[in-house]
Structures are given as structure tokens and as C-alpha cells.
Image (cartoon, rainbow, N blue to C red):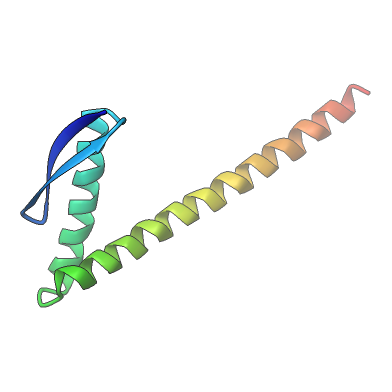
Length: 88
């Protein structure tokens, strides 16, 4: 387990984990970008409220992608079953 120094909204953090340094930095940059977008749209927002909004936005993205993935997996399974039925 290694340590990685990151910077989010001007604050320095040390992150420990099993993921690669590149991966952790990429995640931190993504979170920092989301927070900066929120701050740009709402300059007077507190860091805590900005963090909550960013978390909700990221969670929304995750759930939309998961839903799309599940739909695609179901479609592939249905088409596979239909094709398999042609060989019976």
C-alpha cells in the first residue's frame, strides 16, 4: 500500500491505497474538476455544500452508467439467446 499526495480545491491530502499513483491522481483530478465546476456556478457556496453537490453529481453519473451497462448486458443476453435459438 502506497501513499500519494493530491490536491483538491487547493487543499493537500495524502491518500493511502492499493491503487496505482496514476489512478489515484486521475480520480483526484476528476473530483477537483467537479468541485471547480460547482464553485464556478456558485461562487459563494461553502466547500462542504460544494462537496455534497459534487458527490451527488458523481453518484448520478455512476448510476446512469450502471443502468446503461445493465441495459446493454440484457440486450446482449437477449440477442445471444435469440441467435442460439436459431441453431436448435
